[in-house]
Length: 258
Image (cartoon, rainbow, N blue to C red; front, side):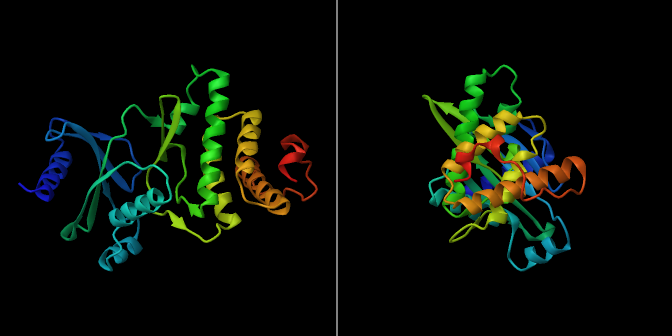
C-alpha cells in the first residue's frame, strides 16, 4: 500500500474499534481516536470532523472542508513560529461528507486545563507556568494571530530540558490580522477564563501582568480590554450587569494601565 492507502486503512481501523486504537473524549461535532502507526512506531490522533450545521455541509460541497481548514490553520501558526502537532495526513470522503485529520502525538504532554487543575503542583511552579502561558498568548496576539477556540483542552504543554513548550490544537478557525482587534483578544482571553476554578484572583492578576507586558497596546486599549473581559466574566456569573467605566483598577496594579 502507498502512504495514502495506509492512512485510509488506519482510519477504517479506528472507526471499527480495532485493537491498537481507542476513542478519546471530544466535542459532539467530532470524533477523535488514538492509534499507533506500526511502520514507524509513532502514536497519532485521528480526528473525524462532523457537520455542525447545514452551513458546514454547504461549505464541504464548496470545497471548504473542515479538516483542510484545520491543517491550514496549523500551518499558519507554524509559519509564525508557534508549535503544533505534526500533520501527517488529510483525507476527504465525499460520499459521507466527512473529512479526517491525522496528527502526530506530542509525547509527555498534557493539556493546559490539566496542568492548572493539578493540585500537586507547587505554588512557585504554578505561578511560573501561568506567566509562561500569558507570555505565549501575548506573543500570539502581537503576531496578529487569533485562535478560534482557545480553551484549556486545545493547548498542550510539556517541559523539556527546563524549556516550556506549548502546542496548539483545533486550529480550524485560526485567523491572521495585520493588527488583531480588541474584540478578538477579548474573546480568546474570555475562553481561557472559562477554565472552572483553575486560577485564583491573585493568579489572574499574575496572568494579566505577564500578558499586558507583551501586548502592543496603549493605555486606553489596555483599560478597554480589561473592562471587556471583566464585564463578560460578571455577566457569566451574575447575569446581565454593567461594569462601570469608573471601576477601581488598583487591584490589577496601576502599572498595567499606563
